[in-house]
Length: 235
Image (tube, rainbow, N blue to C red):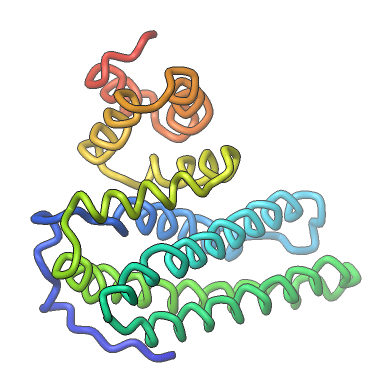
């Protein structure tokens, strides 16, 4: 699926609720980090590369979940307003094909004899790079084309409701996994807004778990100190 877009026609993204922003930033950063690691990996070192493969599978699981969340909640909401999501649905089908092909390449590396592991690793690296390129173009289209469609058809409160239904559908471990990739990828103001709302609305034990297992490990000491000061977190 090809993507055509203009870099000069990006809408004002600061004026309305951005349902895509934080999760897309998380997927972009995590994907780029993984692509860099795949590029420098010693694929003959099965033990060392095994940790990378685990992280890659975790990323692909989150990416697949994200696609399903958009299908089940955002696309359904748009369709109820009479807005076609055919192009987005086709792009998501392309993603599912890529997830299957990447898993096959991972399995091929795992089965390969040591002499052939570097070649299998290179195929995996190139395939993941192609997936990332396609996904980045897809996310750009969602944020610059689908986002304005949402703004024309839904109020900010309605879009927040869609996002809350997505969050409510997640099991705790998957919700935490998404937070781990999102928090380091968003800017300080976005962190304060996201975590400030969570501090206000979530049960205290849930909020503290997010701080302990997603926020603190994902930020530099300086960034965490600034966030803790802004949110008045306990030391």
